[in-house]
Image 1 (tube, each protein chain N blue to C red):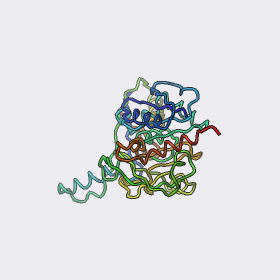
Image 2: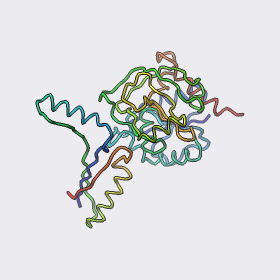
Image 3: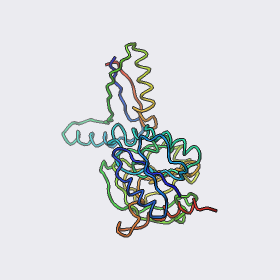
Image 4: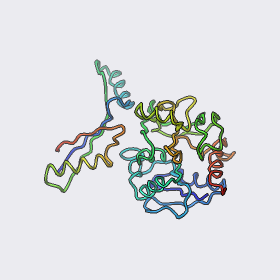
Length: 79
Length: 222
C-alpha cells in the first residue's frame, strides 16, 4: 500500500525558506501572496495491505523519525 | 580523562575534536556509528561537526537513530558527559538529550566565520575554564544553527542558567541569541560554534582551548 506523508513546520515556527520563496514570487509580479510555508512529502510503499494498519505504521514512523515533533506536524494520505 | 569521539558517515570534524582532546592530555578512542557500546571507562563522549548522513531528512536526524546513539543515551542517563559541536548539537536535539531544534539560518546562508560569544554558565565542566561573563571568539560554520524552542523551554533554560554561550552579534537568528545549551544535570552540552577549531595558535585563535582544559579539571582525581 502506498501512502504519502506530508511534513510541515508547525504554525508559529518561522519558515525562512518559505519567506524567501514569498519574496521571490513578489519579485516576479505575483501579487497578494500573503504567506508561503514550505514542507516535504514522503511517499511510502508498504508491504502492509490493510489500510488502517498501514496508516498506523506510517504514524509510528512519523513519531520516531520522519517528523520532528518539536517543530513539525504531519498528516498521512493514501496515495 | 577518557574521551570517545564518534564518527558518522559524513562527520568531518571528528579528527579535529580527537586532536583537541588529546592536546589537553585525554586518552581518545574513536568510535564508529555502528558500534553498540562505548569503550569501558569513558568519561566523555564527543559528537563532532560535519554532515552526518548528508543532512538527509533533517540535520542529525538519522545519526540520532544510529546504534551508537542508543549507547550514548544510556551513558547520559547514567550521568556521563556528552559534548556535541555543530552537527553534534543537531544530533543531541534530535536524540532528545537537549530541548528545542535547530532550523535553517534566518538569512538562509551557510555562515563560516569567527564569532564573539559570551560565556553565560560557569558552573559546568565545559565552562569551568572560563569565568562567567567571559567573552571569547570561536568560529562557526553552519547552515542550520538557528536555535528554536517554545517560550516555556526558553524561559526554563534561562532561569536555570542552562544557556552556556550566547552570540554577541546573532549571526543566524537563534532565539535569545543562544549558541549553546546545557542539559538539566549540566553534563550534556550542545553548541554550534567550534571550540576545537580555536585550539592552537595556527588556527588563528586559542579561545576554545579553555573548554578542553576545564573538562580535564572536572575529571582530575580528587
